[in-house]
Image (cartoon, rainbow, N blue to C red; front, side, top):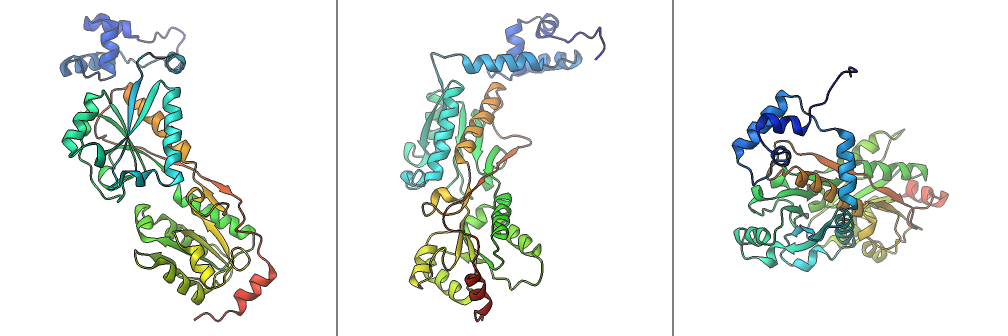
Length: 359
């Protein structure tokens, strides 16, 4: 930067626009109280003057905002839309998302309030009005019961961030776990412990929700193994008797270890006298919602909730509402939870796998 360089300021823009500095600041943040032509005029002048915020001052202002205790806290709406409202908070991982969001919201001077769209309003139009009446401008949209569901709120009235990526609302910034990387981490731990014959058991609705990233990572990981693999077909489970389906699959293919995201695995194994981890290793793709103490991926759902608030706060600061021209997805990497269910493989397990009669 040249020694005689002078950065354009809000004061320079205000002088040329014949407005107050406060009005210029509001215009650059798309404040809804200003006419559209005023905001456009201010932005044009800012562009002509090559105005750019001073990053040091912006960082200082953000720091002061975090430290300032506000008398009237803004409310962030955490919106779920399940037929049975209590079902959303039934699983620990979902509770962790809310806890992380609540804690970060308080740090930034907000409060977070959980609304159930199916319970708090008879229709989307009325629900939108309830949120507006309560002064809510920012929304965190929880994962839908079915990721292809719809919730047609007046989106242009709100800044929105989603947990996961709803099929019909992909035009919002979204926070999601890095499922592909999680699966490869599972395989890395399996290799370290000597496992080679590994099966994947996953509920079809989960697989569809995550665009089949687990299956893709499973096939890739298998392709990287040295030597010829006697591969085990992926087991996708539908809504029928999952325990019986898992039981038959275990009997037929006899894996050394199973990576799973489903219910009923332990019941199926026990019905055949198969013990975890003595007879088969087990890896969970979400330890928060699985049998206590299992080995697998901890998804850091609290971090996901906190990150959603950070991104939403950025949108609110810029008064950026409604669908976005380009949405940004933030993937949160999980970490390995050691647990009890994946010890180093024993010679007995290797012999059992090699001598099994695979049909």
